Image (tube, rainbow, N blue to C red; front, top):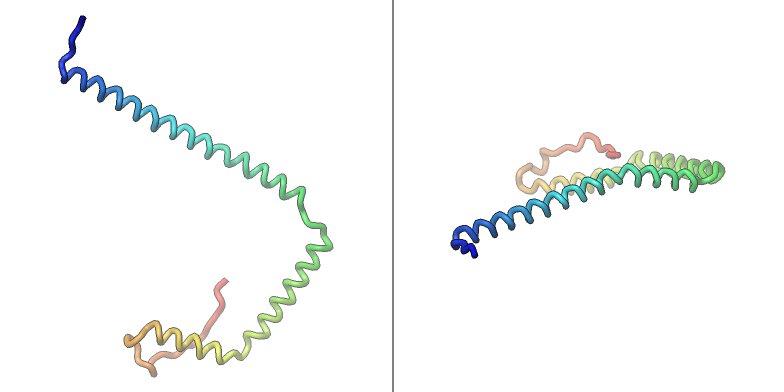
Length: 114
């Protein structure tokens, strides 16, 4: 019968714990890489489903016409909108607080960010 010292038995337990921990980490990493590699198949399946569920041409043309009307209406409404300029100027002044004098700020232009 072989008797191990306390140091030998604790070193064996530490080695086993290290191997189990590293094995777990590598198994999880392999699992994650498999999931990531499946993303290409998921996108291909999704594209096939989108192609089968396409909207017919008459519906898409009516949608395009509606969008064109909305865009033209928005462009007409943006022309002389002085109240909007005043509100934006007040918001900028409130944001800047006492850092900028009230008469030193002039808003030159405002454009919509898309």
